Image (cartoon, rainbow, N blue to C red; front, side, top):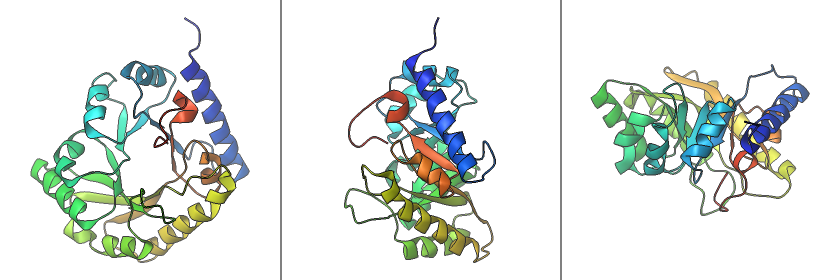
Length: 235
């Protein structure tokens, strides 16, 4: 069997990602590629796994459930969409990281479910950049307020920040947003709060992930560059 289109796309994205690391003087392999698989069939997700991609991002719990069992248990699944508090139980059961915690009520729900199961869950705080009403996220000051409440959520490990900049055809226009989130990350890290880590920055999607890498991203969420064009809400 010849190389699949998804395998070729994965090789191209990984090559561009490593080149961006080199331009920024960062160690090779320091940025993880999260393959955004919402609306992608389980068969194509399996193709991506065989192509060497091991971390996948989903925005809907129910859609993810139909794919997770199709991959080996070593696959890592991140939740990257807006999470309703009533989906917290399923989310903590199937996702190794929840990247979109943006409010205390959601953290409360995740804490309740994780504590009930005796597990700890890695989370990122989603911050809002720009003024798009369709985008979720805490304000920068709101993120600081959330992180100060970390002792209330001992079953959650706050690992860093996530953001989605306003869409633009020019990836350079996303750079100031990425830089602002990195500065916020450093501001929070400087507080020295116990049980709070700020090692992760989830920034960048298909159109701007190379700029995100140059600005310090440790996770990039790439969908259409791997799987082809999909609905406008896709990464």
